[in-house]
Amino acid sequence: MKTLAIVAAVLTAGSGLWFVARSPSDAESNGDGSSEPTTAVVARRDIGAAVLATGVVRPQVGAEVQVGSRISGVLERLYVTVGDRVRRGQLLAQLDSTEHAARYAEALAAVETARAEHAFAAQEFARAEAMQERDVIPEAEYERAARLRDVTQSQVKQAQANLQSSQIQMGYTRIIAPIGGVVANVSTQVGETVAASLAAPTFVTIIDLDRLEVWAYVDETDIGRIEVGQHAVFTLDTYPEDEFDGVVTAIRPKAEIQNGVVNYVTVIEIADGHGRILRPEMTTTVNIMLERRADVLAVPGGAVRRDREGTYVFLLRDGVSVKQPIRTGYRGRAYAEVVEGLNEGDTIVVRPPAR
Image 1 (tube, rainbow, N blue to C red):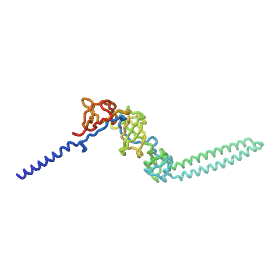
Image 2 (cartoon, one colour):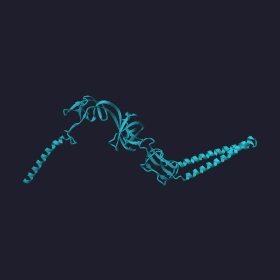
Image 3 (cartoon, one colour):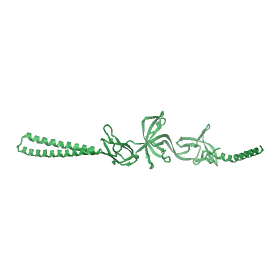
Image 4 (cartoon, rainbow, N blue to C red):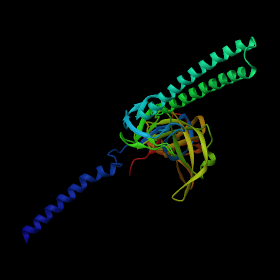
């Protein structure tokens, strides 16, 4: 029993010594290992308010094209795959053109036949015209030769039109890229038979990644402050360290209701992509800039505090934080305008040290 009492006394003394040694350090820490307050210098700057919204990257009108076929046939060759970058006019796919080539050859032969018939009719008319001037043949025979010449000339034109139509149909067997961009989807494989009876079957989908825009979903309480031409900045989850610039180009009149919340789509043109590759459906955080104030005395918004006596900040004087009443004006996204109570160059405490 005496031995146990001695051990307990020693442990209690050791615990007390540890507490005394650790307590001052804990009291000085403000949560990040430092007892120093975070300060800022009062300075003049441009400040502005903003409407915060979430959005997505979408292709512009005409920047996403589903390339299909205007005729039916069997896909003979596919020259691209998903992810390939293509240019406008590039050959994407080739349909079996055997049947259309035969029709083209038939139409070409019909043109040659019609031209020969017309050449013969023109000679007959020339002969009849010479004989009619000498009153050798009757008027009816002359008119018959003239009519045959005109009919064969029309047949030549009809045969040439059929040849052109056949050539166009054969050209449809070559699937050409209507825009430049990146292949986003391939819907048809080699060997498949496509039918273009009701709708053009889709072969590939091309997206022009240089023509993208942002759809920002603005809450109905803020949409009244949004106007075309306002500057906007947005960030992407993919590139969190970059801030992209844009301009509001349109506000869609029809609302979109998501989970009972009414939002309006605000279209933002991307002004500068910073050389980054943006892709459709990327999530964005958008700040649409509203009114701006230039060259005003401002402090960080987190430094401004309020109590029953009014608005104040902690002013740093000779290393001591002093409560300083102020009067604020315009409040921006990150800074607040100081109308009275501070001078340029004053040092204020944004985050005081922990007690």
